[in-house]
Image (tube, rainbow, N blue to C red; front, top):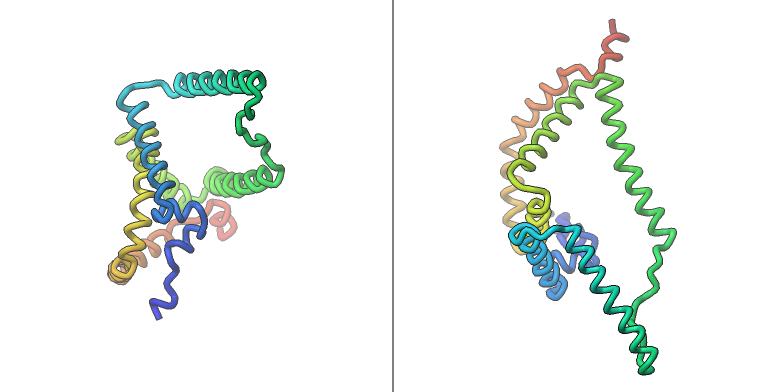
Length: 203
């Protein structure tokens, strides 16, 4: 039963290009992502190169190369630079805007629960989450944190797919043993008043 109900890592990652890259089925994509992220991290973090200067110099070099390529192509009857039409479709913009709207509305709903309804439970959970982010941010800078995220993305899904059965067994064992602890935490959180408005109504 566990084998039939288990979802593969490839399906969980979308069964597309991202899944092929993160699971190293597309070895070229994985190598490019690893080498590119490592090079950028070394360039900005270790060499101390400025991100703005890097972007400006790269764009300047690219524009100059494309300009002289186009000029030489017209003079020597050679093909123009193979640049595709740089156009963002309206559909992709609407999809991205819809995804952002969902995240923003969810964040605003939590803010409303804390600021207007006085939800102490939401305040405690938000404070713990922000404190955890602050603590992690004090250990690493933003660029190093992104680089660690890339390395974890290229390693954790791949290793989990290789040892999924063993990992699932350990997770089930931990969940069964930690179940009573989670129930106690839920009971404590349930005792916390949800909002001041509900208290006033009951009074």
